Length: 266
Image (cartoon, rainbow, N blue to C red; front, side, top):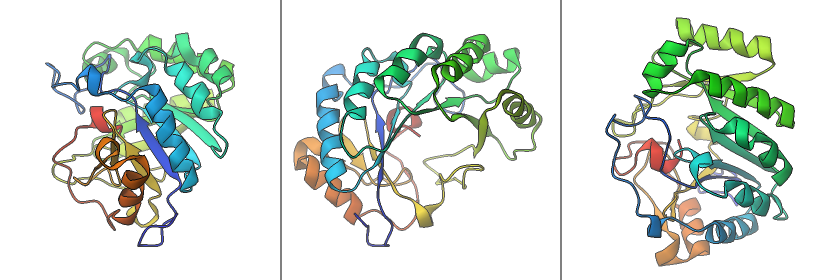
């Protein structure tokens, strides 16, 4: 299905939880933020219903996000259900990597094709500071487990402040080159001020070619990361929410004052 700016909308990003096992300094305050009530979070069965309806409208690519998707119990089963839907050609997942060593093999067996792992530095102490306590060795083990499981490509998402020439970014790039990984540099974004740029090494942030919709963990279809527009699958029904999101998808991003990265999936 094409939107009013003749962009083919074929990509759905699904946030399965707003919970996370890290507290990255650019994502949320140290004390955390108010969380979605458990009873308001979509069941896996409802998420699968959304994907099936989205496929009828032309969605071919799905990415599972969070928060941190691997903290939600049974996420491997969701991967298995989505991978079995006829019409899905590409199924990926974005993770901080902390729990990936445990899940990589099962995710691959369930039908996951590719994975993106967040890594903003290769320095253990800096990593601990950025994530407020994270263990970088867990991420390194998760990367190796993903490669061993046959997930390909393994992409690294590296957030930079101003430039991919920053020392930490250069170290991450060197690490990726040595380990057969693809790196994407994501300039630090601000939803409320509308600050974003095109992702280096990826397609994100390029409004002219944006092909994405987003499903939040509490059942809202969002046509744009940097927009307050959202359409409830509970109030409108799944198909109507999807159709409205496509029809009213803005030409370009502006601001988003209603969401945070932990509950919209980045």
